[in-house]
Image 1 (tube, rainbow, N blue to C red):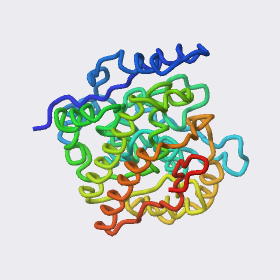
Image 2: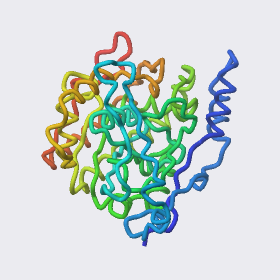
Image 3: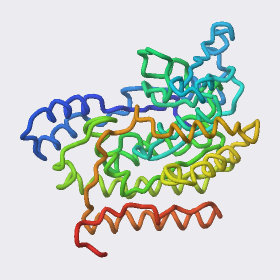
Length: 355
């Protein structure tokens, strides 16, 4: 039986503590370790309950709100572009859409991907993570989080990191997966509908460390990417990235996998069309001008880190992450799904390293 409470936690204290440390020029690895471990694991900080909003709920809270009081949050994401400014993004009607997961390991570019999905379809995506920012917001909108419950049936697809949210050690991931029964989310919440977003784990591990220590937009110091804490994080990401990906690949009944690197390049249109095909999105084909505007504005930087970490990986770390890639590639082959675009991956070699 899935427990009544599904918990999602955010290490706010960690981020605030590390931001203060970064103001000091003499930051060292010891201070990083202390800050990172100073807050005990507590997945109950922020809560979204399955019992209240799952497919088995009677949606009593939703029924209290009439359609006339429902703010569909219409906004125009490209208002500064004369050829695109007329395209709007808004919520769908309440309870009009099935629940879909856009699942990924943190640091895989999911908010950026949501921007493209919203621009292309004109329908907002959602997030099960409390206080997660909307990819597109109304002008001068101060609220950075969702204002409607994440199971309103009014969003096209919803961000869900599942048991990988905020993980920094394997036992924490396994506790969420099995102790908190997050492994059942794909069935209980989404009825096996999902789109899996995958990014090169050798990039993900750096993005994830930055997010754990200094939040979405800042960059941790070089000292954060070496030492025993870094070794443990690489081990955790190698394990959890693989396990999360394979579980969803094996269990998704309706959906597909998409790749961050393809969305960056010349194949972005094909990748987005494949996503909409898997979701049976209508009407099709999508508006050609919407597609043009979406691709033209995909470099929007509201949720991108200004200075992406580009450091080399130690050989043993690369070996672990390459093993993860091979395991996921094998799982994709078994499903006859598109394969990881490994030829586009940054291997994070050091200068003079050949293997």
